[in-house]
Image 1 (cartoon, rainbow, N blue to C red):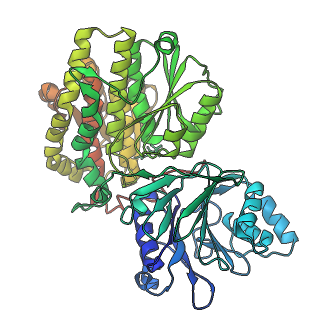
Image 2: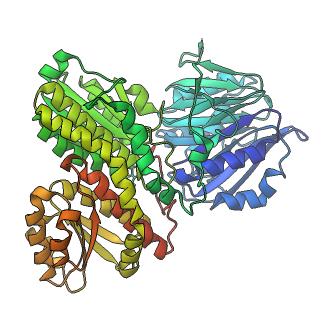
Image 3: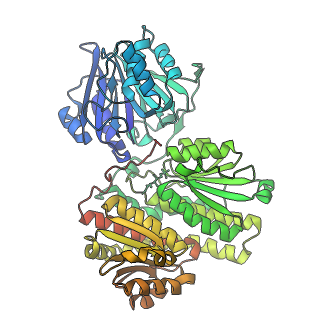
Length: 611
Ligand code: F6R
């Protein structure tokens, strides 16, 4: 989704803004722009271009063309108005005095636009953001802060804003409501950004803006205000992500790099949480009273994080015997969910900023649920609004298609299921020990799976021309299929569906004909015989079968399937974590062979901050 960067300091601003925006490209965008103070003319210079950031950067000769030490930049993901130069941000007021970059949606923009037009204000773009710039100018009488305050009382919706005014060359105003925005504190310079990767090259000292807060940035410092415009102190935290972690480090794509980083990410996520044969959560606990009275668990998430929840449901119900509901973030608040103070609500989000998931969290909290979130981005909105948070510590994930965040989320949720089962006394001690031992083996076994990536590349070369691919599996393998299918379709643009194998004969099998590719998942040993019979079923209708199973079942599967991918056997609790890796690689290689834009698939955004 849209990305914001702002800089005020002693250096040329435009190159810093363009470089910061390039770090935000992964979020997804369709146009880009910058606005800076032009010291010579005393006005704002605004440059925008539809398409890749490189187009804008080439036009500005890498920023060298704009002589200024303060400005804001933006990558836009179109919501109101098609992608075009005119609809790109920054949006400016009619006199050109005010420039605004915006992430989010102004819900009442039509009403405000009508009001301004009645006052004789004319508009040049179709965006909701232009309304903000025009409205600030409408209220501006020499006091920018006051004008912004008046606008904030009138706009509704979600917004992170970066505001420049030609009369105030020594300040940038930042505002946040329901859309992420952070402050960066440098030496003689300060920043705003949608996320920390945009400014990591310049500073590690950041402050997280809360909803309703406003900040005035100058070269010397940052003054924050609460929603009542009272000055507040902001806590400054030091980010410990390495810059390299947000760069490709020699790999062709972020997605591939992140796939390869998974064993390390799992170690980071799990090692501190496994001690002396036990799952240990230093950063989290639940009272005895809550545990004894816990009646239900809800898991709420979107996309791949939702698929983590699907696996989690099987694990949690098996290990705790407590009913678990998995809900899509976008559905939860409209389904009248049964949540009360005896409900544990597990919210899963890599970015911690997904608006639907956030809205679900707020609804669950309103209903009295206890909110535990599993999040990757430290200090993100979901993390901050939860009662408790478990961080996945996967490091920055840049590719739009999630990989290492998915596997660490799943590892953490599985460990949590085990921890809960132990606390509730629903898992025998011996089983607990076996499972903990399996967690220790996980990163090593994943390295083994990754070492066979050339085989997967070869299989991808056999199948990349298919235009429809089915995934099927039962139980854990069904949940795995959902993720495998999503990975494939989002980056390769091949139509794909995932089915619970038993459901095929209730309709979908009519689509299977000669040569249809079915990816048959048969990793779960307990249900292997059933998986085999489904493979026979689709083979006899002419399907080509690419199967995934564990080493012990490889031979048997190979007797029927056309091709078999294998993973080492491991405790069922962790099978989907190993099993997803060949599917990630398959999706990656297929997309590569089809010449797709792997890290930034069309129409998709990394952080989905609109409904
Ligand atoms: C798919 C993918 C998305 C996200 C979804 C939720 O590869 O990345 O489906 O899983 O948009 O995002 P988070 O986890 O950030 O809430």
